[in-house]
Amino acid sequence: MAAKPPGLLFACAAIALLGVPSRLRPPNLALSCRSRGPRQVPNSLLNRFVIHSILVSSPISPSLSGLAFSPVSGYRSEWILVWRQREAFVKSHLRSEKRAGSKAAIGAVLAVVSLFCVGVSVRNLLRAQEFHPARAYFEAGGKVPHGAHLAGALHSGSDDPALIGQWAAPVSLGMIPIHAALLYTGKLLFWEYPNLQGTGGTLSILYDPIANAVTNLSPTGNDDFFCAGLSQLPDGRILVDGGLNGPLHKGPLGTKYAYIFDPSSNTWTAQQNMKFARYYPTNIQYPDGTALAVSGNNAKGGAVIRPMEHFDPVAGTWTTLPSTANLPLASWDNYPRMFLLPSGNIVTAGQIQQSWMFAPSTNSWTYVGDLNYSFRHGEGAVLMPSLEQVMVIGGQVPQQTPTNTTEMIDFTQPTPQWTYGIPMNFARQNLNAVQLPDGTILVVGGAGGSQPYQNPVKTAEVYNPATSTWSLLAAQAGSRGYHSTALLLPNGTVISEGSDSGNTLQTYAEIYSPPYLFNGPQPTITAAPTSVNYGANFTITTPDAANITSVVLMRNDAVTHADHFDQRMVPLAFTTGSGELTATAPASGDYAPPGYYMLFIVNSSGVPSVAPFVNLNTASGHAQGR
Image 1 (tube, helix red, strand yellow):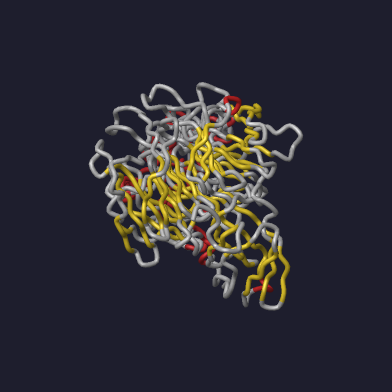
Image 2: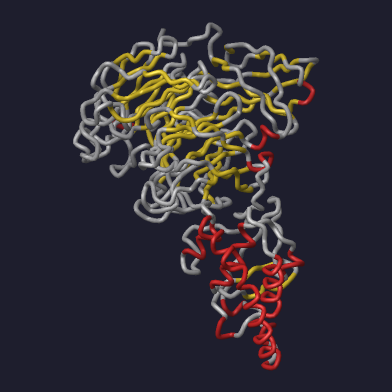
């Protein structure tokens, strides 16, 4: 960071304290402190220089600047930037005509002195790359950007990874990871378009993040998995259904294809076709390990498929559900966000405004309520650790500027309804919201503009449900908007990749280490079972037992188009013994569908262990489909 010239500090203080002639005074920007009145700041080139220096350069003491800053509770060395109406500006500048005249003269002299430093600051301003809301204010001509949340949005610029985490250098994958799934082997399955667009033969790879090795897995057939649904099966295989029938940009033409990828042999196997072609379908797992294919455009791209289909991984067959299970609206969205609740019912949470509840026991739908914001295309959606609350994050009304707002619904309430939560610092669409083992939610990537790749947001942020606060984190190198993916890894890091915007890093992945990995050593698990049955007690051997405060299962995830089909965090009850923990598995598949999970223990400092994979629901390893 550039050092702040001493002359500038003097000039900042003088301008803030003395003001400027009213004819130079621009409208509607004030810096506010709870204990002092706001002071008007001129929106001139000089003042842009002053504000930029405060926000981008190293922090200065409020007592030196004379500017009324105030720390935000819950954020270290961050500042509130508040815009106010013109009539709310401080009137102390105009207490008398005599004082105004003398201030104008002194202010003019000090302005000339401070201009010596303008050249350096303007250079810094032009070179600054990281987008943040305060700079967006200036770039918007002094208007507050739509959806901007400036309170708490600015941090001190600390590079301390214990505060903001750290991104590793990008690594090449040789393709664009538009679809991603974490396998029980610890490796990642990625795929994108066909080898030759429009001719089939999806390009897929296996990536080993430990060895940083890429293996080509492209199927030998001509079927196209681009924009398919995908999900984990109980035995750790990956179900893929639907996709694109024809060249890119020729319309959302669905396919009936279904395939399974087997991590034990690294092979693709064609399955029975679905009855209906689907492009952009969502997969959701039942408590018994079977799966649903929901929504998606038909073969002609002209309508959304309303009938739902059920896949049995043991028999390898698809069954169309009764007509009572058809989607309740013809205007249903593609890639709907859907979550299994402990009741056994499945709730939708965007992208359309209406939320519905599906009851598998009766194959029927019930209306729940509307999101307050509107349609949330490209939103993030997360089932909270309580398993009874759902949070939606960001998104956009199509072709409009995205929002930074969030909403939550609680199904323990007699009449659940969506309520606004704490907004993010940045408005984003096509973001990835990833649950972390400490219970926080990491948001990476997304676009800040109305178009899928416009104004990429590179600064990550994290939501802490315990304090209801968002904190800014380190910025990644790549632009990760539309067609980007992100997944939690067993060592507690998060891998972010993709977005086919034409940027130089679209075929690269970046691994993020959250702040908790710089907060002391990770606790260790020296022994744990590879499989557990529902409701069973099991032992975790660890030398850190006395310092463990939580034990959680994190579902192996599968994701595309910001839709995290399998993401789920399940806290476990446990007791502490000498060198070991005794944890209790979830009671049934309603709480945690069968399949592979990462088993994390988290210590009192919030630091998670490296997680082993545990298969839930069987003592023999692979549950079904073998």
